[in-house]
Image 1 (tube, rainbow, N blue to C red):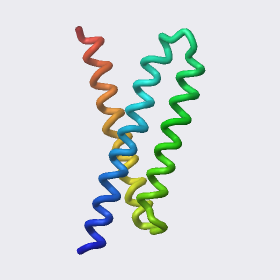
Image 2: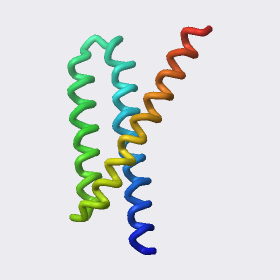
Image 3: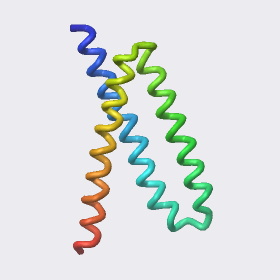
Image 4: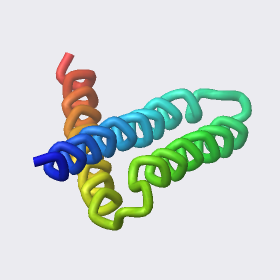
Length: 96
């Protein structure tokens, strides 16, 4: 039972890491396209998001490949969720 709780925790943290990563990407695109210096926005955001994700994966996995795999699953679940939210937001903007 303790192992199931650890895997569920890894899944939850994976969703949080993915939400930060892909939500940050969406926010960066929104800010970067209207910025005077978009290269700085995209480079800085990419560096911050990748660093956060890699450090998060490293600490959550704790050397256990199963926790890493479940964390990555949560990461990709968040990708789907953020993509759906971004599409809904885009459609909401064009509908009005």
